Length: 250
Image (cartoon, rainbow, N blue to C red):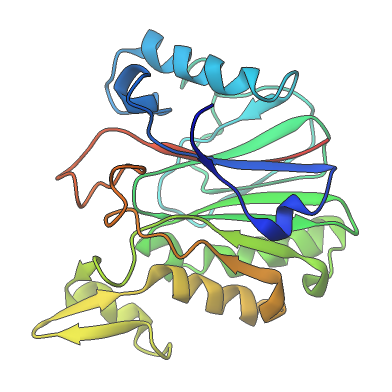
């Protein structure tokens, strides 16, 4: 694969593998990996096969994301939702597992992808947080689910907040911004509009869940600013492409 993004903190562990894909003009649909956006399915499957070759025998798990706070714990070592939408995990926006040789995946084009790893309990998670999921505190709830299901200590959890639309480009109305009024620096006012900082808000949720500041790595990449590398629904006026953020245990 020509272009990818990775986190330094997660890369320090040989038994944890992760990756964030980028656009690639040499591949179908610029290397979109989404089956739900009406591109020709066989071309997307080809892109997924290209990605999978990079990881050998890893089994990939995908979900039909719905901007919810629904979290699924994956206790079986199998592939799901990779070759078709029908067997993807339904109505789910966060995945948690302690199974080896599976890859948890999130598809985005501006929403916030978050990857989590507890090196002590050997547990991983992948989160999709748009403004609706962020309003529902899905990042906070995922950490709490890791505690309940696998006895994780939040102080041990490492986090990577992947490329997503930044405050520089995410203009919203007050009906959205009002949900985050209680969070310091959640947005800047721009006339009657607000510039919302979703990556920052999700970082605050992780801190409130007990993660230390030094355990959270921000990509500081805005998908709208870096549209040559990442799909951006806002910048591209409703693009159909999606890039993938993923994490797995070896």
